[in-house]
Each structure stands twice: as structure tokens, then as C-alpha cells.
Amino acid sequence: MDKLLIQGGTPLCGEIAISGAKNAALPILCASLLSSDSLHLSNVPRLKDVSTMLRLIEQMGVEVTHEGADSMALNSRGLNNPLAPYDLVKTMRASILVLGPLLARHGEARVSLPGGCAIGARPVEQHLRGLQAMGAEIQVEQGYIHARVGTRGLKGACIVTDMVTVTGTENLMMAAVLADGETVIENAAREPEVVDLANCLVSMGAQVSGAGTDKIRIRGVQRLHGASHAVMADRIETGTYLCAAAATAGEIRLTRTSAAYLDAVVDKLLDAGCDIVAEREAIRLKAPPRLKAVSVRTSPYPAFPTDMQAQFMAVNCVAEGSAVIRETIFENRFMHAVELIRLGADIKIDASNAMVTGVDRLDGATVMATDLRASASLVIAGLVAQGETMIERIYHLDRGYERIEEKLGQLGAQVRRIR
Ligand code: EPU
Image (cartoon, rainbow, N blue to C red; front, side, top):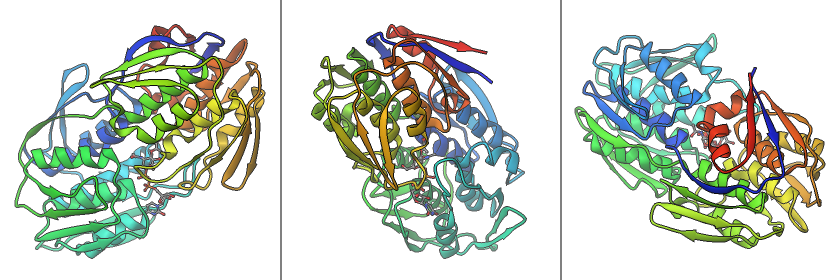
């Protein structure tokens, strides 16, 4: 298993380009299941999760033609196997996103029930309830969700989800685009990735309005056609590099991205003492010699994202003062804290609160990555720590950060992958 060796202590300086968003690309790849015409995608990040999703839809009969380093055409004319097997779903929970499109286009789907994961139980009953409201018959047998619709297909419905769910909203939106009549999703997720998916669906001929608000209306159409779509920039990758530069007292410029979807994160970095300039398609950050501790509380968009919580914990580890990090989305998303403590951090966990008191220095050690964003926080801490930090199990990082050691290297960090 690959490891990352970081020689810490160098401020990050320079410029890099941000990749397309993982959490937008994954549902958009599934949207290709909705039409028999080709969907041309660009700015698709080269990530493990993206290649897993491509493998998953390819074995269903989708033809994938790579057109450039980050662009491809997907054609699902030959869709013939509406199955998401356990061995793929267990490596990537986002596989559940094939359920809605398969039901809408094929009338049937068998998708392995995703299990719990390192950050929480993460059930999918809201996805299933919504599809049932649209007329799907669903049975869960031997670890598989078996969903079917009668000959008349899915019907529009009014769905109010019990909690804000990102992939739940996306699954239901994709199911509804070919349903008979109007679907209204209330308490919908407002995340920018939901909007990017909606924009892609609209360019395929779908009638979707209200994406980006908590009420999305979808009027079903007979068929969708081919389209071209550029995946939005990854706001979490952007935020992660901003935090890395902030924690190392660096100065960076991130291109092919925007501060537009990062208000909550930018506000916290300003509170911490950073100078930030938002350009049209770039962001600059200059960090002070020592950051001030900032408390954060995670919540659905537009509030502070849970996917940036671990990175802010790392930032606070070396800031001046104390901060409370409150996680409200996932019940077990503090696994990075014990690893940060191994580097010398002062963190006390009490249920969903972490009290972090900044220390003058961290010292390199061997640490273990437990999930994607936890790994990112360990990279940030490793970049700050004196001496060598070895991060084990970095396959988590490869799921969500494109060419991370190369991008960090461009910013002057000393990072090496050990195979
Ligand atoms: N939930 C339920 N039942 C459901 C659906 C969700 O109880 O049927 C709960 C979850 O257990 C969680 C909360 O609702 O406590 C929110 O979960 P949500 O469904 O929004 O999460 P998700 O759609 O599975 C996406 C991202 C995650 C990100 C969360 C929250 C993708 C592919 N994944 O997950 O991204 O943390 O939204 O913003 O979009 C990551 O990129 O590292 C990552 C974990």
C-alpha cells in the first residue's frame, strides 16, 4: 500500500490549478445512464472514485471513450445489466447514485446496499422512500436493493426528505427527470454539486428548476438527449489547499476555481488572520506568521461543510488560542484527531465536539489515514510538523485528490510517494 512521506516545515508558495469536483463528477457520470445519446464531459478529475464509477457503469453496458486527459464521452445505448455489485459498492458508497437513473431508464435495478463507513452509519432510507413515493417497488434482500417499476414507469410525487441529503437529492432528481408528471423535492440539499448535476440534466433536455434552493421541481420528459458539460471546480480541494497554505504561513494562488461556493470557509480563514483575494476564476491567500484559532460548526450548504472539518482541525492545531470544532453531519468524523495527537496536537473530544488548543510546534511521526478528508488533515499537519511524517493508507487520498504529491510539490512542499 502506498504511503506519503512529508518533510515538513516549508511554507507553501506558488500557483496550482484546481481539478473538477469529485462530488459533482460522480452523479454526473451516473446521469449518462439516462439517455441513449452521448454525454460529453470535460474537467473530470482523474481520481480513484471516478475510475471506480466508470468501471461500474461500463459493466452495465455504458461505452466510455476517453477524449482527452480530463474529458470523455459516455454512451449508454447498450445499457443491459442494471446491477451494482457488492465488490464495487463496498469501495465507493456513491455507487448508490446509479439507482435513480437505472430505475428511470431501465425500470429495474439491483444495487448492493452500502454498508456503514469510517465516518458513520450513513443509511440510504431517504433515497428508497423517495423512489417508493414515485411508485417504485423496493425489496432489500441478501444485502441488495432490488427496485422495480411497473410498465407505466415512475410517477411524479411530492417528497419531503427527513434530513438534508446530498446524494439522496441527486438520486431522486435523476429518477424524476423521466417520470410521468411533476416531482417536488422539499428539504432538498442546496450544495453546488446538486446545482451542477441539475445544469447537466437541463442541458440533456430535463426540466428542472429550483436547484440550489431547498425546493426542487422536476417536470418529467419522455427522453433526454446528448449534451456537453464541464464539471465544476472542486470546492473542497480548493479549501484544502487554502488550509495547507494557511497552516504553513504560505502564500498561494489557486486557479480554475472560484471563491463563489466557499463563503463559509473563506470567512473562517479571514477570521484566522489570512488575507484572501477572490479573482474571477482564481483565489489568492496570504497567511500571517501565526494563525488565530477559529471555531467551526458543520452544517449543510451554505454553512460550513463537513468535508472541511478535518482540515480546519489541523489548522487549529498550530493556531494561537483554543477553538471548538463541532461536527453535526456524521457521528464518527473525528478519527483524524487521535492521529493529529500523535504529531503533538492538543485535542480533547467530547461526543460531537473537539476542543483544540494550538501548540507551538508539531513533530513528524508515522500516522494512519482513515478516510478521505481525515487524510487531508494529516497531510496539512505533516506539512507543518518539524521533521518527517509518514502517512500510511493513502489510498483514501487518491479517491479524492488528483495528483496530490505533484500539486504540493509545485507549491514547494517536500512530499514523496513511497510505493
Ligand atoms: N442520511 C440518512 N439517511 C439517508 C441519507 C442520509 O440518515 O437516507 C444521513 C447521513 O447518515 C448523514 C446525513 O444524513 O448523517 C447527511 O448525509 P448525506 O446523504 O448528505 O451524505 P452523502 O450524500 O452520502 C455527500 C458527499 C460526502 C459529504 C456529504 C455531506 C458525495 C458523493 N458524497 O455524501 O462527501 O460529506 O454529502 O456533505 O457527494 C467526501 O467527499 O469526503 C464525502 C464524504
